[in-house]
Image (tube, rainbow, N blue to C red; front, side, top):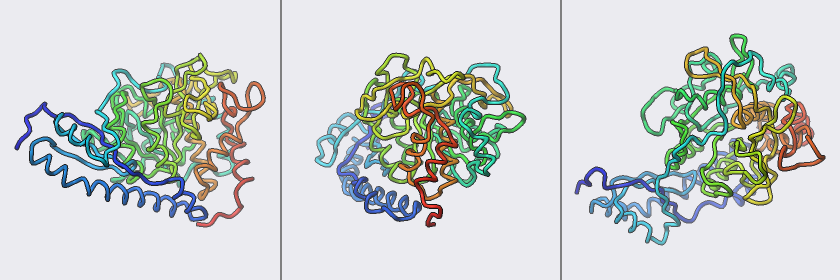
Length: 424
């Protein structure tokens, strides 16, 4: 029977078991990066398809009874998005293969880790500070590398981003289905962060670290608010369709401390050789102001510094609530940075926050990927942290991590730990 409007709600239904990503990654050691990615994605899709197909008859029965309106599956984690009545949700929760049922949630305020201001300079001190010009002189500008972003969106009209949009049906997704071409809200967060990673340094404005890289985007936070359903759609799309080499995550989960709700997603990206770069957040200056997903163990979290190399005042500090990891992993320029703004094709703002520091770091990661196409995610992360310029007391700490992003240092470390010739 037809379910009356307003009597259903959307929930995320996690199924068990998932894929042993650690074991799978270990078994793929020595294979090409393309094969590692393909095998991981295929394993995730196969596991999801088997378990979700097994549940389909039960869901279809609930649909016929008017308790379920619709469902769709994901593979980045073994998960279903189900629209159902409370009775249908209760029936699902009692199934033995269901690990968790989580209602759709959305934060009431923006979840971003940066904000635009006015009056930008034309040349970014941040680009100079991380050593990008030296990489450019070596012929490294990110060419052949794809950077993705899950954010408010991104505009393909702006002069900094128009030439670098990859294009085609695999490069843009609005999970709400409202736009078929890339666009951003007037908040402009996604456009600004992406421009610091891959901006083409056009019209006299120098702001992008990897101006030769291409970009794709998914509007998972269209008004800046974190929505667990939209982010799941984008996370799955990035893994299975967009498949960037580097992925910028410049937003935070709403709860303080360690929130593991995205751990499986992050693990899947990394296993599929997508390097996620996380903004550490702007919840400081007190110690212990970390937030997820940037505080997950072993990920690349990026804090901020000012022009004098001092910690960005609002930057979130460690130690990590998720245990063990240095947080932030490193720092990058986070104040007085020129960034593209989507008001027009030639609008700019002055930006601040660890979101923009993460954009610079993502551009650096793209250049490392270009220099070593077969390097693993772990090797790129090691190069960025191991090649950083130490700040403050010797060694890693909860204010600057392993130090300030230094692209020449990262390139040197990567070259020293990789064979001269890589297998295609």
